[in-house]
Image (tube, rainbow, N blue to C red; front, side, top):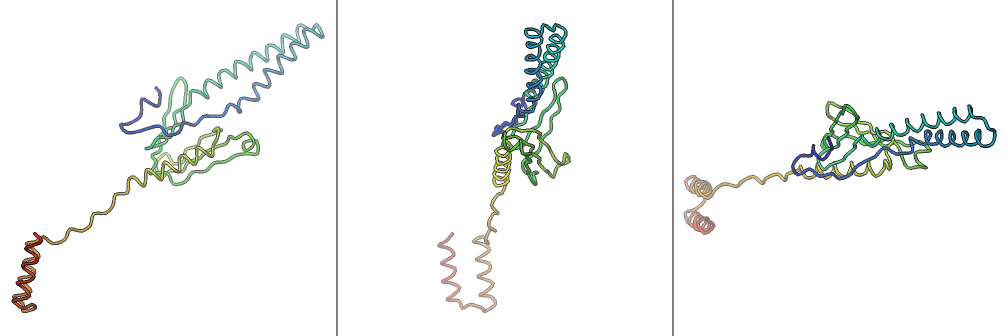
Length: 203
């Protein structure tokens, strides 16, 4: 099931994060080394057993690479204007949501190689029951972090409704208050009449 089928009415995808392919670099190196060793053993040293062993290692590493890359592409990390969706798994799928108004802090971590090759981890602390959500080995982690912070701020800002101004007394209530002032002798009949006319003109 794709993320798009889970979106609610009015919900839009703002950012889609991906796990970097650089995590698969060691397997690529093993495949390349196995093919080179197999070629050298076969063509230069006429060592058929050695070539077959090296070729077998390259094939196994290639199969592992294909499986891990399939898993990498099967995982979905999506930021919408309402929440962050983390859906992982191939045969069985697991989905976790973090609503933007529950996000307390967003942190990204990069090793030296991560800084040089632009990948790292993004961790989100939330006030929900799921607690922290960790996105490992994300390509371009800083733009992902900034997109989350901007979306959370916009979501919270959209949820702030201005307080309604307290309603003033109605015209009838103001007339009663004016009559009470006259009855208590706090204003003169002339003042009462002038104010009464003013109130009537405003109705």
